[in-house]
Length: 249
Ligand SMILES: NC(=O)c1ccc[n+]([C@@H]2O[C@H](COP(=O)([O-])OP(=O)(O)OC[C@H]3O[C@@H](n4cnc5c(N)ncnc54)[C@H](O)[C@@H]3O)[C@@H](O)[C@H]2O)c1
View 1 (cartoon, rainbow, N blue to C red):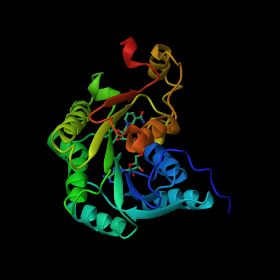
View 2: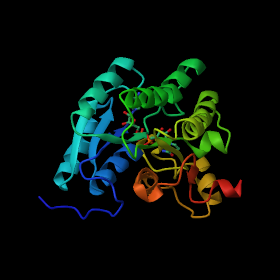
View 3: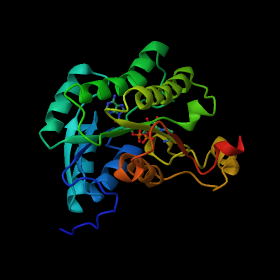
View 4: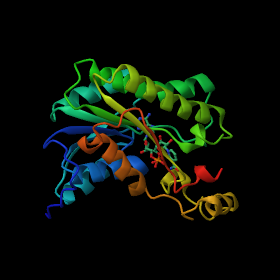
């Protein structure tokens, strides 16, 4: 086994980060990089095999991670998942990443319950037992929804709501947790497979000043920075990570 070089983010040794949606895409990248940065990763996902693969990848590089099969939209799963995560150490950080794809057809109110409602449930359940010193979280929003309108009504509304909820946390619960939102642009994950080669993809990429999609790691590193003690005075920020796409709109 090779030991990874620890990225110098200043996280506490053995502190736990809960990453939801860690079987794939952005969540998986956050889990991998968080382990490199010395955190113990509680990797949550509904996809049992996928999250087990993430944990195996982390173990291969000398990091520490545990797979937790849980649906963040189910209260019982959240309570069970948090109880298991607390056994791993102090949960000092949370990345609320899991959320449905905009391509899925969902009834509006149910979609808001699943997307922003699940993030709120995660935060309330985590902090119900008392917030640890230095607690921080990042909620994954989207430039699609906060800056750009989307065809899907619930996706647009849900992502805006996640950013509004993050501002609430920053303003009214700053004594418990530092909260920020990251808004990815077009990111090359399984849910956007084939996008870059499509006609609409080519048109969008043509307007992105960096002329490419983001990689999951492009999103993961800013997420980790915001979670870390290096960002100790950043609270309530909305951070687009989009290659400059939205400033061209
Ligand atoms: N890919 C992009 O271009 C993009 C852009 C903006 C925002 N986002 C946001 O980033 C986040 C991750 O997207 P991605 O592209 O990495 O997606 P992805 O489909 O690659 O991965 C999402 C993961 O979340 C899991 N998941 C979904 N619902 C869940 C639930 N209820 N409980 C537990 N796990 C659940 C899935 O099983 C999957 O493993 C989402 O919130 C998405 O809206 C993505």
